[in-house]
Image 1 (cartoon, rainbow, N blue to C red):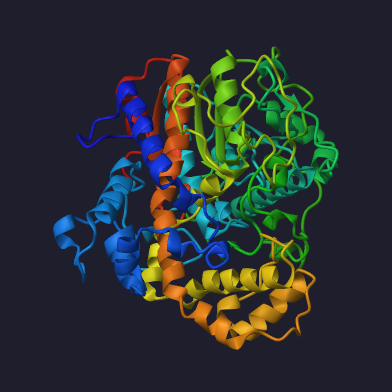
Image 2: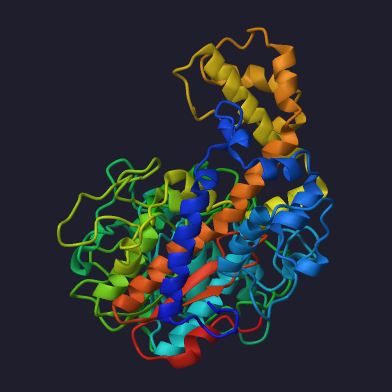
Length: 601
């Protein structure tokens, strides 16, 4: 991560930046700590300075985007009224102290925020081989391709081709690294159901490639493929590296995949063990002939077994389209490919004393303390030479103030030998006054600022949702004061509903009478303040990058306190993938090589 001079920040500059951010958050933390659903019940608007209220009241959404959230040149920003210096200083400070989230040397984005690779087809990356697009949503296609290239370059720099993907989910990144980039990959996931899906997708890919090879009429070559090895197990952030892999959590279905239980044929074993070089699928080359098998319906982020943030993978697997039309409609091969030896859940800890050679750790959107586990095991395990970490779900980090945050899948027991919490990690940040971050502040840091800007520009009807929910919160507490901050199940397309219908559905979901009469005048008065609700939320979003910057600064300083090099690289398109900063670290002295890993696209 670079400073204003364009050079990477020194350790002392990083420490000073952490000091500055904690100071700013101590002054304005009440904004980022507030729950927008309590806008009316806690009079959040009234807590802002009066001079701020005067210029922000009823400010149109496009102007909010232009004058508050977007980081433009001061001379290019047009203010309809004179803003107070305190608000201008607040805005300038927030923009200046936050890490840049704009990737350098990359293709641009379309008006809707999608990267250039989705210009021709909004669901299929033009830069990713169709074999790796199947089952993968566009966002994940973009992330897998970009992070895969960084891991490959880091592998070449460190001369290490063994990769451990922690929190691998359905194996999309591991599959690309192994089949597409020729790396030896061990994929660790805590949810056995996701491991089953990953091995199934591996098998489909190999069969699809075999079918493609069969189309060749002239001397089809015999190939040998080695996909990722999938391991079902939990990564313990607290444990020593010799014991970091735990058995699957008791609450998770850990049945082995059908493929893992099936025995390979003698031909498979002979082909797998042969000294011939294995075939690598071109990462970007299109398949010859046949239709593109890309599908975007089911695959998403990694599920709860990997401590990740999306539950899309819990859906039933039925109805998955298959590319094997020649074998009959609906056919999905259950046996192993004759040239592919299936992976098996391993009992051996891949980082343990029996590990062979050198390892590279990676994690794509490892959730909460799982991303912290990567850092800790990188610093402790002698086998690990480098790591890449893209974090997410900061609200699930354990802290001294909140050792068991909501949504934590499997809290680790406290240990006297290891740091107990996911934040802070570094001795420097731990010693700063005001370094503590509330659950709400860490949750706000996970929001997509760039996406919200697009909504503001277009005056999207979705913007009214926060005002609807804040008004509903007022009605809920009026009916039952004990009911506060309830997790109201999402009302589908709430912004398209009249508020009366939205309120009926919301009250019903929290166990209140949906037919209770509404105070129409009171409701209308609250709904009339929609733009003020949007403005307050925009102020909180302005601080969100500061919270993320402080969390990532803490990790960078921690690694340097342990004596290791690291670099933070904005990698993904931030409008498309909000958590786009990848932390790269290596144990050997790599000089400027770390900062050039992303390169041009």
